[in-house]
Length: 454
Image (cartoon, rainbow, N blue to C red; front, side, top):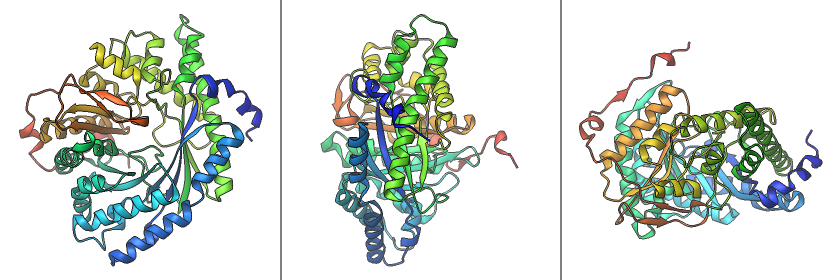
């Protein structure tokens, strides 16, 4: 059992080191909402989400007040909508109606985001999958809090390159559809390989079909806590460094475990998982890049960065799994550019390139995340970047993702402001050589030989 004294021990972390519970995410199955009539389907979706989530925000706020733990976001994830809308939706406009329903009910219950406007197409696309994907630019421009994700590859099945090519176009069209807001729609769209069913973080959260009818997943965060702990052992050897990270991750995860158990009890919803991810914010002192600096590299991107990130990611997992029986989601260190002041500084100093970020994704939790690129970048180039990242995930049996933002009307040397947790970003240069012939081949990249486990 978790004792309240463990929370008291973390007061300084909360007050001075930016420790927070980043999100309580309520996963909701919509499988029992399926109907061939679109009006009936939208009504069922609205009613199911409202009845299940109406007390989520209030409960999260109560827990935050009672325990003195900041809970930054309350979110909802739902069953991938391509599965739910397949019987009723005959056009991309039909799917957009579902997105608008999700947006309406999410605002009604007061959550920050709702995820699950998603399709899982790692081996091929159904007609419903294709229609949903084609609706994404319209859906994200017509809504405010809906997040979308598409899983185009896995270690078991390979990479659907037709879907990758299509997503290059969809990312560009989403940027165009939301160009008046600096292409903000792309910040709510992520492309995955090996997407987890229980991820509480946006934009990639969806409620997997193997999950219970409803579930509570919690994402914790504490880059500032880890950095402060490492400052106390500056100059010590790697053994001391690793032990410090593990012990700190243990304490952070215990806070998340307490919040998860309380939310589960008060809402009458089973506890799912704790996601151990170190998720940075634009706040000074809440940066994964600053942890890498404290480990010993001058800037994120300097030689040694990938090794330092691998160490950090592994020790966070080792410390966290001892603190909770149920660990899942992404769990590790996030390296978004716009959401991490240290990453932004590294880009502006010339230390961090898109290619180095790609190398770092081999050992971190996610992938190329919240990276602003020139608006004139070709959709085939975007598809090629997605393909590279999917290959890293497929071969390394890990989750990887791409959240690129081609900012229409802006180029290298300019910055874009997203606001809030999304922060701001310098627009990074992209390799200008063509990959058109590669991404236009069509078909699938086969699964690697180590996928055959049966």
